[in-house]
Length: 206
Image (cartoon, rainbow, N blue to C red):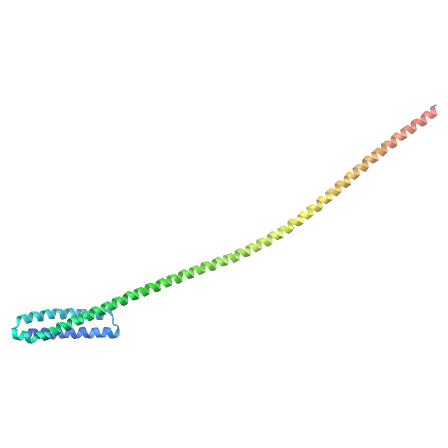
């Protein structure tokens, strides 16, 4: 029985430690270390329960019956703490999963925000380029308008030159006509003078 009592004291120590660490974890939202230490304490308590059960088999029936009820309570306490540990572990796993999902959502939001920012930058650059292109287009249009005015001015000058050339042609044509008329008059005058001279000569000789 002394061996059983020794195992029972060790068992109580591990159970007390596991219970304290679980309460600390639940009240303070402790770290993984508390769950790990609780699991270790319960593992040692489980070994001691098995030893205590073997000890009971080695005792007489009267002694075993006296210890049986308390042994069952110790086993129930152990199973209860194991269930609490499992619940705490499941809760933590869910929280970790939710935290990961939340972190993933935040990362996606950051990525989406980054994409929106980059898209906004591209649109801003495109808008700036469009404004610059529009300015260049206006400058080119104004330049073309100036060149058009110059061309129209040159065209007007060409038209003036053409008119002057036509006028000069008419003057030259008129002068040529006058020159021809003068030649005809001169030829007629010469012919008349020759005829008059011939008549005078004929009269004198006759």
